[in-house]
Amino acid sequence: MNKILVLFDSKTGHTAKMAALVAEGAKTISDTEVRLRSVEEATAEDVIWCDGLAVGSPTNMGLLSWKMKRFWDETMIPQWAKVDGKIACAFSSSGGWGGGSELVCQSLLTVLMNFGFLVFGVTDYVSRDLTLHYGAIAAKEPRDEETQAACRKLGRRLAEWTAVYAHGRHNEHPLRKMSERMMPEA
Image 1 (cartoon, one colour):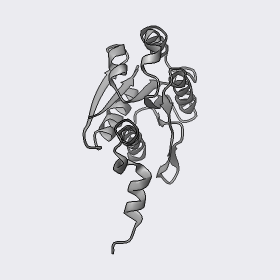
Image 2 (cartoon, rainbow, N blue to C red; image 1 turned 60 degrees about the horizontal axis):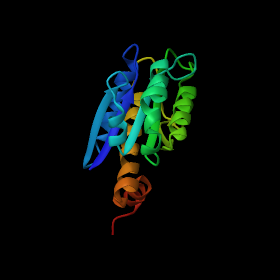
Image 3 (tube, rainbow, N blue to C red; image 1 turned 90 degrees about the vertical axis):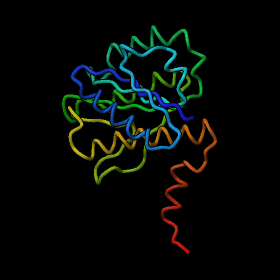
Image 4 (cartoon, rainbow, N blue to C red; image 1 turned 45 degrees about the vertical axis):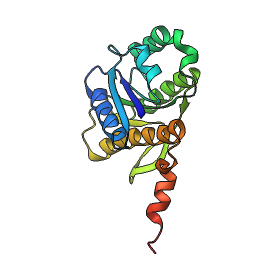
């Protein structure tokens, strides 16, 4: 069973809505269990339990929220060696475009790398102008279809990578699936 944790902090509810969309995307991969936890309710055991982790934070002056930072500084520091090698990604919302969401994703990825997580971005374009190189981002609430698709894509990709690397399910590899879709039928 593929185990995904979507961990988030949300002040206005916007990042929580993104988290729900990320979880929805992860659930599209078969044999995947998803836990959705706010930073206030999450435990170290949730992080130890998962194979893959999506972490979301509102943008707080271009950085992750203090609640999310405190979770890693206080709750997770005693678990340092227990999460090494797990797969992770990031997402963030801000007050508007240019508000620093990509910087927040980078700061989340930096925290995760310090704990030994293998982090990734997504090269696929979700729409003509929207990529997930550092993670999924939103300006305010994820209202438009492109932003919602980006969140779902991030969750799906996390579940694909954990299925492949944690469980040996190579048929879930996204590049393999893409090449199979592009092959002409005989």
